[in-house]
Image 1 (cartoon, rainbow, N blue to C red):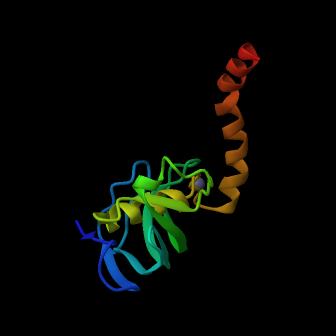
Image 2 (image 1 turned 135 degrees about the horizontal axis):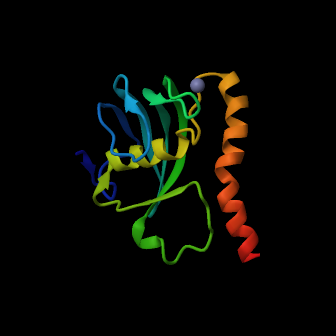
Length: 152
Ligand SMILES: [Zn+2]
């Protein structure tokens, strides 16, 4: 586990790392290491900014035909990081803000949060499977619709 103290030190901090496992629920297995390149800059006393890229290939299962499917994630990170202590006072309601303990900043859990955000909700092996999948999903949602009708 890599912990940084973001209340001290000189900025920007440049990070380049590889992760071979991620503890993110309901995502595929990493086919190769996830690589992360990032730069953490200090904007003000309690606000930091992280820019960079996440790149990884996951082996997942097509939701429709259950075939093994590769999911390639290449995503830009561009988030503000604020001290977790600010969470209760913050009324700005920005969803691009991560709240972290700046003194014990866990870079791995930060990356895991990012991956969880960008990982596709629906994994499909091909475009065709997407079309078929739509009908499947409607069926799957039916019981929920009924419940919703009862409540409404
Ligand atoms: Zn499929």
